[in-house]
Image (tube, rainbow over the protein chains, first blue to last red):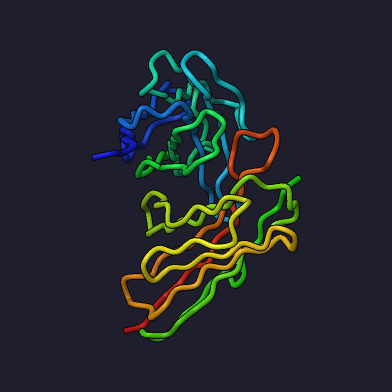
Length: 114
Length: 113
């Protein structure tokens, strides 16, 4: 089944404790991206990648890192999480690196930082 | 900067009604527009993708139209069912630059049995 898989789905952590949210897609998509969704602010892009070893900042990249060492994986790293990073996070992918087609989303990862 | 607005923010209808959800965008230079459905606490499911050269797309009881020049799209849902209850979001991809979709804030739909 074609899908975007994120882990963990739910996570509670404390300020400053590094964490990684993994994302994997099995559709051979070139483009991958991370969004966060917050009440009243909607969906905002954090980072995106157009191909292996090619990443770029989105609208709200502060406090986050990403890497794209393999085509299928695009982990989101929070080196020192803070409470304002409490949010619902989505990974998404699309076939074309130019994002000219459909964007497919994962199920989301709900992160709480205490 | 592109802005996407969805009206109404919430809608409650009885089962069986035909309904229209609206999406407007400020910059008509778009590559495509996509409609999504989001169930509470879940991911976004793609419903329809309309390229800028197209006027409409249909999938089952859903029909989406696009009027690029006026910056508007509508999602028409025929014969609504309780299972259609969800938040519907539209998103646009600009014709140049930014490798991201700009999302509206969504319309929360409740279909009463």
